[in-house]
Length: 184
Image (cartoon, rainbow, N blue to C red; front, side, top):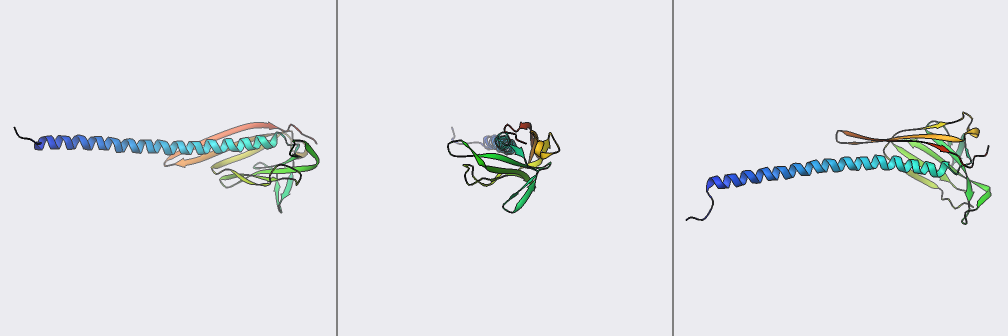
């Protein structure tokens, strides 16, 4: 009895090995595509959710929507894609500082959505610019009154979009937010 493989056995083993290897490579590419799609989905859903959470955190305690306000020399005006808010300032113990106001603007710039905070010196809020979304497709603010000094609620509609290969991933959130501390 001879030890070893015949030519036919070697060809069969090689063929089976090639088929198994091709199946593994295909599995890798399929899961890689699914992973990329899921990452795009997380980016769109996460950024629209983060933007809406930031809006809720600013609109609910706000005492009024402003027609416009200057932030470090740049003036922002409330409109369909920009929201300018006045908020009561509060100190470290949580008490409202009567003589102080904080100002917040939400605005879009291309595919990015930002929150800019201008805090009073007596306030515990921190001034600064925060990018809330890098996958913005559209944002719109709708007000319950054309006179910004009378606005008591804002409808925020945020759409985000990301592209992965030939697939488009979108997320849309819409919420009506009321100013709890409204003061005309």
